[in-house]
Amino acid sequence: MIISLGHYIFLGTVLFIIGMVGFLVRRNIITVFMSLELMFNAIGINLVGFSHHFGIVRGQIFTMFIIAVAAAEAAVGLAIIIAIFRNKPTVNVDEFNIMKW
Amino acid sequence: MSGIIFYLLSACILVSAILVVTRKNPVYSALFLVVTIVSIAGIFILAGAEFLAVVQIFVYAGGVMVLYVFLIMLINLRKPELKKRQIHNQWLVVVFVCFLLGLEICMLLIPSLVQPSDSGEAARALQDFSNTKEVGKKLYTDFLLPFEVASVLLVVAMIGAVLLGKKDKGDELGDMELEKENATEEMVS
Image (cartoon, rainbow over all chains, first blue to last red; front, side, top):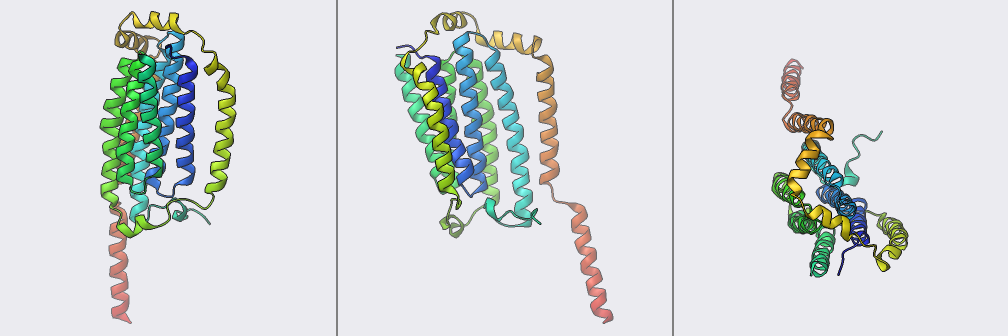
């Protein structure tokens, strides 16, 4: 059995939509960030699938950059969560209304 | 054979991704996210991207997840906080919109799933040489500038994380002075 490009894109799509639902629905900000990681990984699967299909390594290099950006995002995002938590001891995103006027 | 492995890994990824989103306790979510990431590394190996699979396991499962677990332990949620409602009020709208989006993309994809185009030729060409060597060559010639920019981005992120994470010394001093002023005012009055 051959694995076509469609399989990779389908897997990436379903994973992206699971991550999107989690990102928009959950209240706990830590889980929201984890859903964001799921979405990053879905993009990675897509790019690697295309790279496999066309037989060039360019897609894999882009996936590496995505991993680098995801690591940077996680570091800054989690530091921001800690900074907010110091001011307001909650992790629910709908209670973070300190910048609302 | 590779088809069976692909389907097994996909099932593993999707089930653990759903568990990441639905678990109440973020510790369990983090554990299932590790399972998802390792399975995705398996998919990468299946697609002939061995170097990327190793990077995925090192950076995600080793680095980023440790960061998450540290955060969960630092914030240290109490039980009653976890008993509360875990989803927004607008969840129905979100699920509806995401369902529509998924349906749309699936409609577009189903033709390519039913009639799989043969990607064998190009894939076999990719299998023949060392993946790591090829990625390294490409990364240090064609993608040298983005590579350097990525390193700058990581340094900026590191400095930003340290700055955001450390306690603000100025604020503490300000608070102490404020307290002193309050105390002297009380004494005067």
